[in-house]
Length: 258
Image 1 (cartoon, helix red, strand yellow):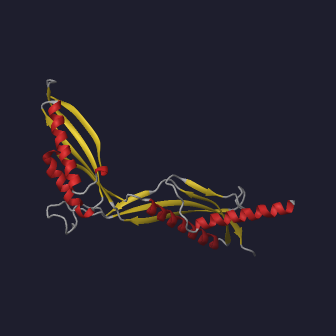
Image 2 (cartoon, rainbow, N blue to C red; image 1 turned 120 degrees about the vertical axis):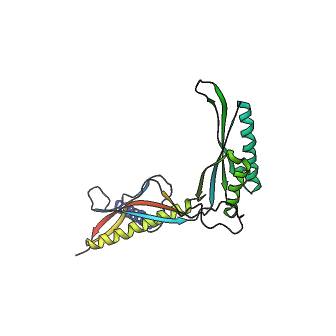
Image 3 (spheres, rainbow, N blue to C red; image 1 turned 180 degrees about the vertical axis):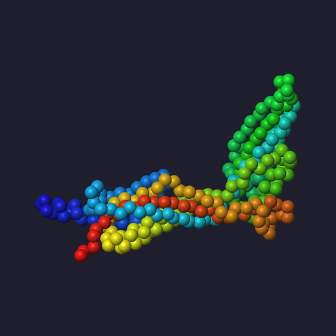
């Protein structure tokens, strides 16, 4: 009975090691925070020889979302007048967005403030109100026309704070970047083990290092514009978004038979 139990335990350890090894060969580790897959398999003890390698991965995706932040700033003699003036222009901006196909759920008020202005004697000379709206644009063919419409709706009171392209669901390119990183780490480990006259044992640990990084490439506001956009529309190009990942892989080492 004891020998059977021992054989079963060894078989279980081999199955676990193989499962983790399959992960190292191409299965992405999920989650953006640092995480690890470990197995206390044969050769993974604290005194056993091990090989630690790192892999860097990269994947590129095309943005499918444009986030526009527009501020409306007005100054009037009274607080009530300033609020009425700003609210009217903010409503006009919202209408311009929805008329150009932006969904109500994709328009959000992100900041409202009102503050008095003073002269050198400390007297109130007027009230300035700021209202910031953030909109998500999904149709890039009309995005330039939408941005232009915002300026027309609020006139000189409008201020474009930012234009940001992104991938709405980045998980697929994140997983591609992680998979690429794991494959690179496995390739490095094989090359190093062969050069050292060793052979790779089971995977002792696979760690997803920290959070993913992003690079936005070739995103411009001055390139070629869509032929369907009006001649006066702001030209916008989404460019590409690049996700990068890094992993640390630890193998047990087993010497080649002499």
